[in-house]
Image 1 (cartoon, rainbow, N blue to C red):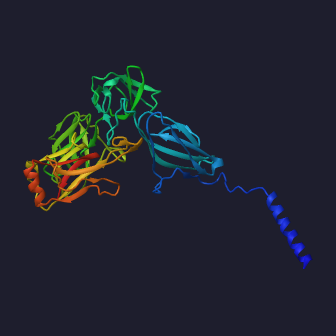
Image 2 (image 1 turned 60 degrees about the vertical axis):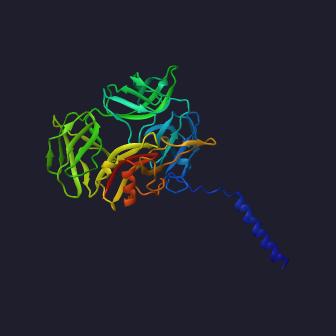
Image 3 (image 1 turned 45 degrees about the vertical axis):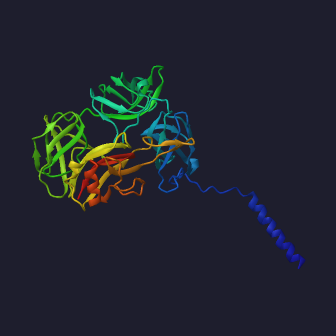
Length: 420
């Protein structure tokens, strides 16, 4: 019995000794496809935001990737490579930037993770945030931006890169108050540029970007129309538009200015239609869509009737939508009122509480006297968009008695209000 126990113990010792001396096995291979394991947000979508309190707060994080031994990490802001490495610690001018973290292996296999970086300004800094739809301008066009402390700005620097290392031009404001600044866009080629605000001491401050268009482009108003009603399409360099074509119907009776084209919409059935526009010289007008700039856009005719069109960035009492009771008189009791809106990018709304930045979006539908048609509510990712409600007799009576239907709130851009 003792002999058997001795043999078993020796076998176990040999096993442990062999395991201790064995070199660990590395499962990573240069032929593996890369995977980014971190950063990853709690919702599991892979989209995330770095929220930085001020321009002196660095983006400080590291990337966990596999196969780590054979993978390079590239960091991009708005498509510009700003850093290469698994661990980053960098500061940026105030603004909102699209972030892409790219992982590339030695064999050229790649993957990426998208997010954004929001850098908040100091309270005393000059700052201007681009609106939800971006800024768009043409050379020699007068451009107005809004923001804070803009009276401190002595020069607007226009740059190819977010750090303003490659300056394309600089201009002096034509007018400037704390809340608003106007300048004339210089001659520049098509593309996106960064605006940087310079004070009297030569210090630069962030102000997001601007898209320059030398050709004719339509930015808004083309997504839908109401047959027989006035149709307004807005953009830049539209003064030479000669015709608008919907399917096979060409309209030449129109009014064209630098920023808009106004016409009577043609007869058309409910559904989707093709839309194109030509200038007097025969060149195509481009439509700026989510897929990029296109010469032919899709437009729809719906069974909805338009009450009001924007856009309007609501800011409680300072800026709210107001539809007079005379215009609401056309809206029958019992219909569904439809509010088309969009949440503004982070950095356009919010406040600090105990040193922590908080942002919010609220909507309040009421009369001109601030009487609720229904209680104000938070707008979250689960809030329906467009937002709808039934127009009751009680609501109609209140709107008639108190002059208007009004929409107030914060952090939202109201684009259109219809009913059906």
